[in-house]
Image 1: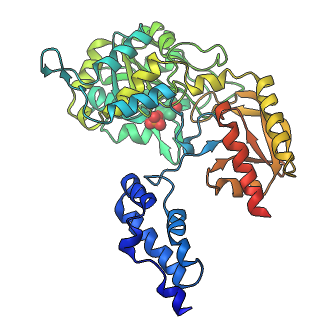
Image 2: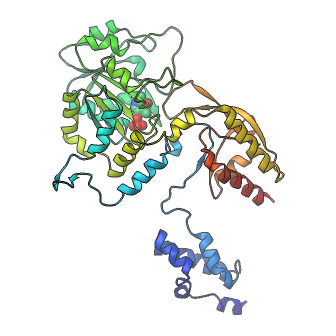
Image 3: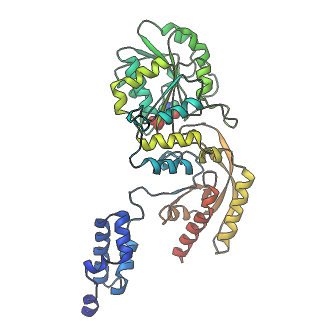
Length: 433
Ligand SMILES: *Cc1c(COP(=O)(O)O)cnc(C)c1O
């Protein structure tokens, strides 16, 4: 044993190994050193052989440069908030890469003078929603509302229906957010019914704007009534429509989901939305509408604190101008094709002796969009213990539990990932043995 311990390579020798040098370039020398020290300790304890220290160190290296691990979203929820909502298209990912270094984000290369930040992304947004006279982009949907309230309504009133005082998630309540700016809320109507007259009675010299909030994560049914933007626009104060999901135009599969174009054409002075919901882009907040209001917001000092990064601008532009987003493709996926994929996957892993079947399932939009809507989908059904094992795997797969089975729903899994999915299931099986 003392002999074997003496054969453990020294740290400086190990760090000259080409694979570890390469790892140091990728993830940083300190992390490689730390893995090497742990591997040497394993050798001292006799857990690995002295010849195996490099391999052991490599096995101990973190899988990703940051703590964020790419996962396969097999939850059947297209926009899963805990999984970062919309996955970016290949075009948007490329745009992020391109923008990561120095770029002309605020410089006109032709004249050498300062230029409007993110002008091409803003132009792309204007082109996509032509009903908007002007646009602005901030960090997220909540920031768009905060900026609207701060720039347009501090010390004044925002008129909002009691049926639209919503909590978005994780204890985050829109009314609290709005009040935190110094604007006052003037609640009108009741939880289930609010009419245009309710708004009309509340409007006065103190009113900054009427806020319409799309209840994007719940539905109230039965004896209900809400005033549409078209009924409120003639009341003489700006109507701000927080549509949430960010659809630029009506979507044929989601007839209930509000979109920017329709709301603006109905008379909304401003529309606010998120970029990483149904638009399928990066996290950001979109503000679209009347030129004077957008300008007031964009010029407010707070706008600087809410402005987006160059990589976000790049991803947004690529999302708007590029090929259909993964979200769009998932929405329009053919359920028959999803089922055929599930059958193929089931066949492949059954060949390894795994209890797997293809099943039909229902997917949801999630992430604050299209509540109550389900989409026909298909899943690979596995024994329940696979759920936790797959989640902890080398390529983490997040499925869902249903009726004592682990379902890997394919609605949000691009077909290109089927191979990785099969390998993930097989590797869990291999560990089981
Ligand atoms: C999601 C959502 C928000 C918040 O948007 P974030 O981008 O998460 O900040 C606000 N309002 C509505 C209606 C939403 O659906």
